[in-house]
Structures are given as structure tokens and as C-alpha cells.
Image 1 (cartoon, helix red, strand yellow):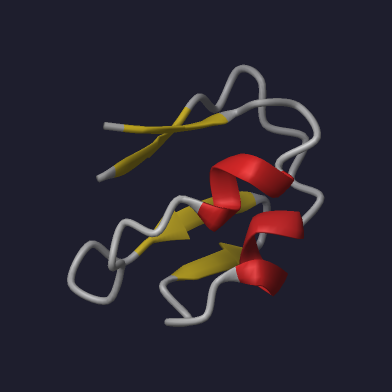
Image 2 (tube, one colour):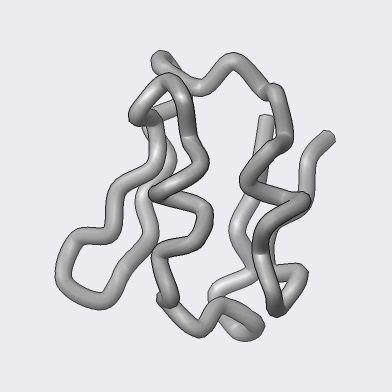
Length: 56
């Protein structure tokens, strides 16, 4: 599962745009990952410019 380091996150939304399963949402100023929808492809970890996302 992908985890977010909120201390690093700049809330740019790059991860939201790349998620094919629509599992990542930017709600106000918080990135939220729906673990039920996430297929752990880790595309979000690749596109994050601040390396705030990490896959297990």
C-alpha cells in the first residue's frame, strides 16, 4: 500500500492525476488514498515531485 509523508507533500495533485483507479483524491488541502480502490501500481510514487509517496 502507498503511504503519504504529509511533511513532504506539497499538495500539487500530480498523484491524483495519474491514478488510473481514481483512488487518490485531493480534499481541501489533504491527499487521501482509498485503500479499497488502490491496486498498488505505484505510479503515484513515480510522478510525485517531492517524493512524498512511498509504496510498500
